[in-house]
Image (cartoon, rainbow, N blue to C red; front, top):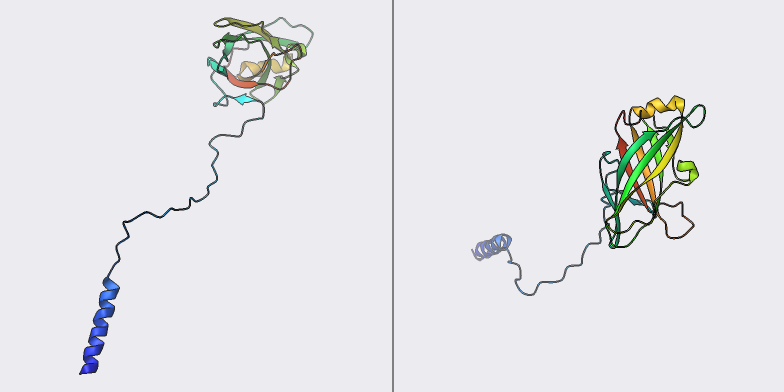
Length: 198
C-alpha cells in the first residue's frame, strides 16, 4: 500500500511538473548582441566620377538638376537641327542642350553628345562630337540659361535609322581650368522621339 501511495505521489509530481510553465523574469532586460548584416544595394553601383540620373533613359522633354549646393544647374534638350551635308556621304546632326544656373556660383560647362540608333549603333561620344571638342558654354551666372551647340556626324546610309528614334547620351564636365578633363562629372540619357531627326 505504501508503495502504491509513493508511486501515486511521484506520478502526480511528474504530471504537475510537466504542466507547469515558468513566467519570464520581468526584471532588468539582458542586452542582446546585434546580428551583423550586410546591406543590400538598392541601386546599381555608379561609375566612379560620374553622377548618373536615377532613371536610365529619361523622356525627351525631361529637365534634370545636376550639381549640389551653391553649384547647381538644370539641363534639358533644347533642339535638334539637320545641317546640309558637310562632305559626301556624311550627314551632320546639330544638338542644342540648354543649361540654366540654378545655384549661386557661376559654372562653365563642356559636354559631349552621343546618339544610339534603334539598331544599337553609336555615333559621337566623348572626344568625338563637335569635331572632338564638344559643346562649350560660357560662364553661366545665377538664373542665366545658355544653349550651346554640339554636333554628331553620321554616314548618310545610317541617318534613316536615327529618324526612327534614338537615345541621346550627354556627358557633362565642369570646366575648372583651360584643360578640360575627358572624365565626365555627370551623364544624362534622354530618349529621342521618332521623326525628330529627319
